[in-house]
Length: 372
Image 1 (cartoon, rainbow, N blue to C red):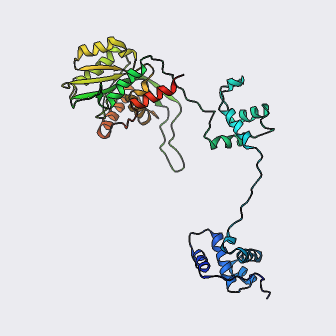
Image 2: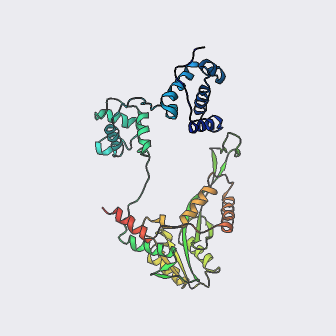
Image 3: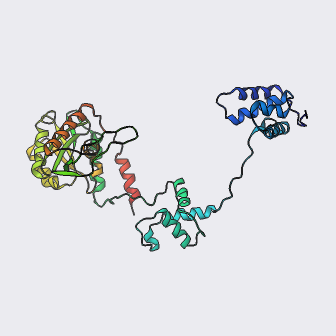
């Protein structure tokens, strides 16, 4: 039997490392195999016999014996692989990413937003690259989380007193008024209406979830009318008081105020602050006067125009939408109202105040950033 010209001689430390790898149950298989080849070679075992013992080709044994004989443990590591040569220069990739960050209208392209195929076509049209696939463009954009095919709606603040009005509400969320802390008998309520909730009865019964199948909701339904849900949310007690009405308006909102202000602890409170948006049922100084005339211990705090996102009741309404109204399958308006009120009681039993962190400092930073 021909002996290998590459002798393997192990010192104590190398043998310890190789023995530990060879016995390891979690090391990569390739490392375990290479360690066993070298350990067998150190015993002057012929290459052919090692190959049979370990179930590999004899050329594999020759390779790792030779590399360990020349470079020791470093020889058992994989050499760097250059991989496929780059087809696109970094500057080209950056230019296409910059193109994705442009609005199509800036280049008089008749598109509302970019898609990856359109970006690839436009890059070729501009001469940025000879040819490129949409999947390649998508891979480039995903590295920087650029998604020009998505969009979000927003409204630029236009109320000249935006900072003043918003700061007043944000301070109340932190139990402050004009820099002074609120007393234990002062409360902050966030109130609004959720109109247009439909009672839709599905033509066929819903099917529950099953293995490898999501819950199924029949697409067709019979309309049962709409109602409005009016609610006041105690910001610091996480308590909701609401009512269902056929529609919104001054009369339904006044009924909500009466429902809240005739119950404790609000009836005997020193002050109760009502934070509202600029909806028609509670807009302007007339609504504030109407509230104060009826209940002298109340004060209406109006948010800036188009700033419902500062109203915490909207968070509760989103919870109702996700947990009660989506998906919907109710027989009539009575059933819908009962379900909403039942959820309200369930919510009050376990609710905690919202983790509201947006304060006046955050507001001023935001408005400064939005300055033209």
